Length: 116
Length: 116
Image (cartoon, rainbow over all chains, first blue to last red):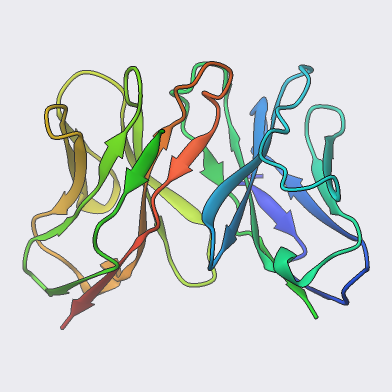
């Protein structure tokens, strides 16, 4: 597609349930990133994928969070046993390479997660 | 510690007047700096970046930014503001810590309000 797409756009769930958020990066981009945007914490890095390399998971806030990227394209962010503090907008981004740090990251529209 | 500061929560400008959105940074090594804009219920849109070279960087929608190494600043500017420029603006810097260069560190954001 022309840009990064994310689904669903909105997700309301009950505390304790698991959720999956999907990201489809720009075609040909080898690097994929997840960020979280919340009122209290601003924009924070969660995880980064580059090609077939092991992902950089250093930003994941707890072991309830995990992500995978299948076939070097689509990524899924999974949050297990959701808590109210997980409520935020989850943004996905992709870039052409990602290995130099100079590449522009292009963001998707985000998934707004509300945990009741 | 690496960080980005946007000292103003909100900037108010009259349409047609010049606008400045301020950003200062603190990183070790060469700073790679970015500006993004976020419209309501949308993801982040890339405006411009500074990697190296000319201190004045021109970007999308008539925006430009001036890199000032001595003041560690990267202020966003536009000569003549439009009402449609009203949005949330984020300054970001590439994390220059070894192994972390794929992450962007974001400022808290500045809300720009352009009044007719």
